[in-house]
Image 1: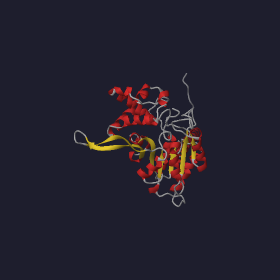
Image 2: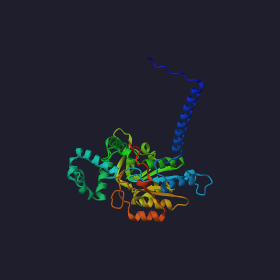
Image 3: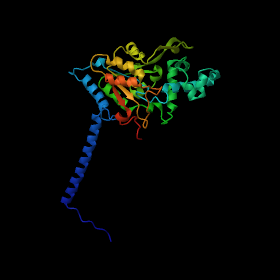
Image 4: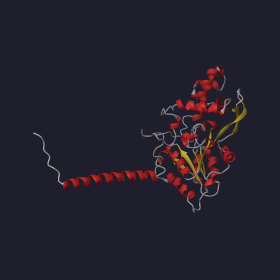
Length: 348
């Protein structure tokens, strides 16, 4: 027997229509409120707290006309260390990993490298033996693998390696191991008229390859360890530069403020680091007039990233640095407490 439905009267229809309209209105308001909240918070990957507030207060104070701490647009400058400050540096600095991979390729062309120290030890893959190598030994590694080619050839080698290399822990490209909270700080500063610079101990021509697509920092705003280059001519007469085995500038410790003066020519109003190698850059920044922002990333989250400090040769954060930060009023960023998420892909 067919089911018969009673016809709806106009009153019932109106009541259903009002309920439906009310439902969609509430849903629209919820979506709009969520969107507005996301738009109003330029640092969504940060937990509420002193570190996040320090960034927001600094930007507001230095860019609001009439503020006693107002900074003219042409003087707005912020410097960032890279390794350990804006991307992962454990268990080994990424530029060193590139040099190790490049050494293996060169050893295929020059087998004698496998019998020559320190390359013999490095090619053995014995981590304990490699840890005993000196800074001078690793400088030889950099000289061999980063020089003798044109900047364009080096850039091509870096791009090719980055396209296939994967981190041993997350098995992701190194350019995905970037800290989302620091990307948000960079974008906020640039939106407020600040120029953002890298001042890194890493090889300048290595970082320049990916600084713009990954961080939004153009290559001319990358200050790093730089090799001399020599002008000459290719076989076809084309002018060219060749990376020379001679370092022109050291960008670790005192070398950071020295390089800032030489290559940038302005003292930054904000500086971001994570290790003892960044101390002098933060001191130099704070020594300027007006409101300044000095921040140090503290790696204290072994679950989502790594936990290390004074006991690590990579990204050393000594007790002396922590004491100086507290004494001088620098902001120490706790990865565990201050960052809601560390990577853009976290939670996938």
